[in-house]
Image (cartoon, rainbow, N blue to C red; front, top):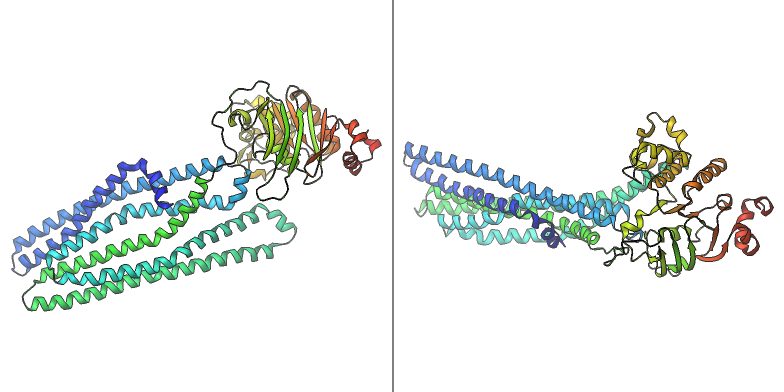
Length: 577
C-alpha cells in the first residue's frame, strides 16, 4: 500500500520532486568530485611543492563545496515542500473519508485508531518522504558514482568493494526483516495507549466517583508497558545497524590501507589516489548506510500506509447515490415501510417490520424498554445507518435515493447524548445555521428554556464552551442542543430522549414553547417519560425491535399491555389518564 499511497498523493508535487532530483544530482556530483580534486592537490601540489597549484586546486575545491552547499539547501527546501504537502493532503483525505463513514465504519475502526491513523501514521509516512527526498535520492547516486570514481582511481583496489558491499547489504536485510512485524505491533500498541487514555479522560468523573484510580493506573501501565516493550525490541534491532555498518566500514578502510600501502610501495599507486580511494570507500559505505536508514524507516511507514489505506479504501455503507434525487415533493413526511436493521455479524435484527407514518403538524412518539431499538430507528431517518431490509421514506422518496445534503439539511437532530463543540455558546448554536442573527439565537434559547442561564453566564452568547460541553450541566447541554436544532428551522425534528435531563416543570414549559415553533414540521420524539409524550398524536410502542402498539395515549391504554406496563411503572393509570 505504501507505493500506491505515495503515487496517489505525490503526483501533484512533480515540480518540487524534479527540483529535488536535479539539486541532489548536482550536490552529489560535487561531493564525488571533491576527493579527486584532493588527490590531485596531494599528488601534484603537496608532493611536488607547487604552492601555486595548491592554491588553484584549493580554490576549485572551495567553489565545488559552495555549489554542493547551495544545491543541498535547494534539495532540502523542495523536499520539505513536497513532504509537508503530501502529509496535508493525506490528512485531508482521511478526514473527508471518516466524515463520510456511517456508525458502522466508525465502530469497526474505533475512534482511538482513527485518531492514530490521522496523526502518528501520517507522520511516519511523511517522515519517510522527507528522508527519501534528502537521503534516498542521494544514496544510489553516491553509491554508483563512488564505485565508478573508485575504479577510475585504482581498479584493483576497488575489488574490495565486491566483498564489503554485499556483506553490508545482507546484514541490513536480515535486521530489517526482523523489524517489520515489530513495527506493525508497535502501531497497534499506540492504538491501545490512545484508547485507554481517551477512555480515562472522557470518563474521569466516573473513575473518581467509583474510586477506581488505582485500577485505571494499572490499565494504563499495562498498555504503556506493552508499547515500551515493543519499542525496546525495535530499538535493539535498530541499535544493531549502525555498529554493523561502522564495523564493516572500518574493516574495509583497514583493508584498503593495507593493500594500498603495498601498491604505493611498489609504485603502482600514488598517495593522493589512496586518499581518494579511502574517501570514495567511505562515501559508498555511507550511502549504503543511509539507504539502510531509510530501509529501517520503510517497514514502519509501510505498516502505517497499510493502516491509512484501510481507511481510505473503506467503502461507506451510507453513500451518496449516483442518481440522487435533489427535490422534495412533500417536505416533512416520514414513512417506515417494513424497515429492518441488523448489525453486521448479529444473529437477530435490532428492528423488524417497522411500519408507520409521521406527518407534518403532528408529533409521533417512540416509546419502549431499554434496548428496544428506539435510537436505531431514529438514526435511520437521516441515514446515519441504512436499513438492511424494507425502506425509510422522506417526502415519499426512499432516503437511499435522496441527496445526502438535501436530506440532512431538512432534519434537526437532537441526539441522545448531546454534544457541544469547543467554542462559544453562539458558535455552537450557529452550527445549525451559520447565518443566524443574535436575535434568532436568543429566540431559540427562549424556546429551549435556556435563555435564563445563558444570560447569567459572564459573556452571554460569547461565553466559552469546552469540548463536549463539560463546562455546563447535563440539562443545560440538552437545552443548548435543542436550541441548536431550533436555529436550523428544519421540516423534520428528531428528539432522541432529549428531555431526560430536565425536571418536570422545565419539560412542560419546553414542550409548550415547542408546539408553536414546530406547528408545520414533523416531530418524532423518543422519550422515557410518559408525561413527555402523552399529548402526541401518534405513539409507537417498541418491544424487542418490533411494533407492539400504535395509537394515541388513551387508545394504547386500552389496547397495548406493554404501554400500560410502561405507564404503570411511572405512575398509576388513573393519575395519567
